[in-house]
Length: 274
Image 1: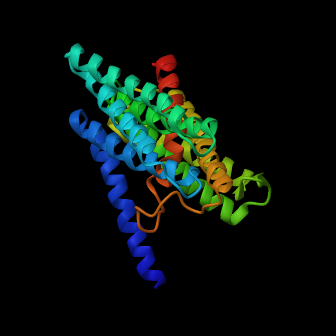
Image 2: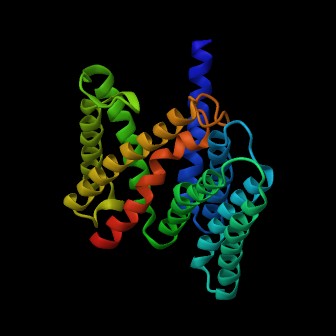
């Protein structure tokens, strides 16, 4: 049974990585499709986690629709049809307004909590995924791949170092297994990965070692914060995983938790450093 679980986990992980890398390399409509699918499932999982067992259907439909529309709107920025872009942004804003107004007619539950949940889904999930689409359209694909590699390398390094040498808790109240040793180990792995990229791959020959190492450190720090934030949400909601969509990995939100915080910071870093 354990071997079967490892195989399932490995296969589903490979499909997930392949989808992300394929979307980044293909760009265009494929990255729009990828972020739209991720937004659809991640927002649904977030609403399911935070709705205390009862998901308001109409409100959730508005939240999910808005998240998907935002992905399409931002993805269309790479094309020249401004009327379509303006129309999509208008639809997105209209959905947010309608969502707020409909809360006036809700007779049950806490309206502040309900609206906060809806708008947090946009800020925490939909907007970072839209920024990811923007990054893929306007920055070199090798830098976006480097960002993803740093996220995965940080996760691997933190696990390897933390599980063998970890003694000092990083944030025990939220994630008891995370340690400072794992945190620094993940960062070290990212720096090593940055050096290897510059030294061994022609795609990164145009970037300095300092630029790539700093990039790796930034990603490492905020990938850890992203993981901790989702752990905080799950712990508050009393759930282990955000969902069950990805066999052996939990839900979509469990897979993209680090990405959601890394993406906005990556945009800031690349705008300042490039």
